[in-house]
Structure formats: C-alpha cells, structure tokens
Length: 248
Image (cartoon, rainbow, N blue to C red; front, top):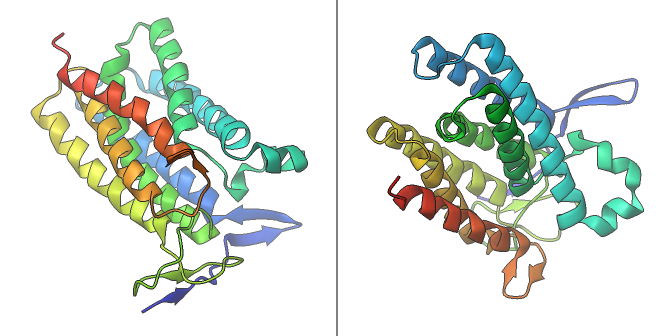
C-alpha cells in the first residue's frame, strides 16, 4: 500500500514565523539526552553536578549545530546555499549533517571535558546512548519535512513526496529504524562492557555500516563509487574499530 505524502511540516504559523515538526523533534531529542544524563547523575554513574551538566549540554549543542550546518552548507550543498545565502541560517527548514554534528560534538565536548577535568570517553559512552534515540526523532522530522527521500521503487511501502516524481523509498524511516536498533544495542552493550570508549566505538561502527547501506537507496549525488555520506562514514568505522579493540 503506497502512501502520498501530504503532511504539513509546520505545526502552526504566527505572523510568518513557523514552528515546525522538524524543530520540535530536535528539541525532543535534546530533552531525551538531558533526562538520561540527569538520571545517570542520580545513579552516580556520571559524576558531575546538574549545573555542570547544563554547561556541558549547552556547549555540545552549540558545537553540534555549528558543525552540522557548516557540513550541510559547505560539504553537501554549497551551490544552493551560495545562491540563497539567507537560508544558511534557516535551520528549522532542515539541512543538518550528522557527520558535521558529530565532529562539532567531539570538538566542543573534548574542549569542555579538558577544561573541567572530565573523562571525555566516559561521557561520550553515555551521550551516544540517548543520542541514538534522539536521532530516531530527528529522522522522523526529516520524513515530515519531505526531505532526504530515496530512489524510485515499486515496493508496497513506497511514498510519493512533494516535488518528487514517482513513489520512493522512505529512507528517513529506514534511518529512524536503524537508529532505534543502535539505541538498544549500545544500551545493552554499555551495561555489559562499560570500559571507556567501547560503547562509543560500537555506536560509530553500527551507525557507519547502516548509513553506508541505506545510502544506496537514497536519491543523492555520487562522488566516484560512493555518496558523500558513505565516504564520510569510512573514517567512523576505522575510529570505532580502534576504540573497540584497543588494549588500553
């Protein structure tokens, strides 16, 4: 049974200013991370104060937004944004890169941990657990926005997106599903093996492998034999495997 996408990406609009489902999903993702880490503080798994948690989250959110937007603009679609420069700042319309967000998070988080004398890898192991779940809602936001869809297909769950010819793979929902799988995988793995960096390593490998697979179904440009997302995922696999199998 195919589906015609006619979902309104805006929840409501006031005087030309829109509140979109896409933005709401990322706010929801932030609170998932916040309450998960706050719970870890209460369990004394994460040894920081709630004031430090607030400072940490503000720092990484800023880093993620800057990194994800810079990648979306300068790596994925520079021609479009150079032709429409005002849209560079309209993040509520979509256009955030996971790889850029990850890089921004790593840089901002590492600087914060260094300044406040916390173990960067220990905190990363905890952040990626709710972070994977937050990604589920982010991809649902992409689906509601009608962006990042896949190639034309005749599968029974194909979707006709606005402005796109034919029925296509709902790759946003594929990504939501694999992020949900990653969430449960890293959650249970952390309980079994809480050594610093191991859960982060598993997250990076799983995400990169799933991302490479799903990219084959997406309707996006190729750079040689792979898409940009696939090329950017290879370093994640290498880093993840190193974290998983390093002896120290």
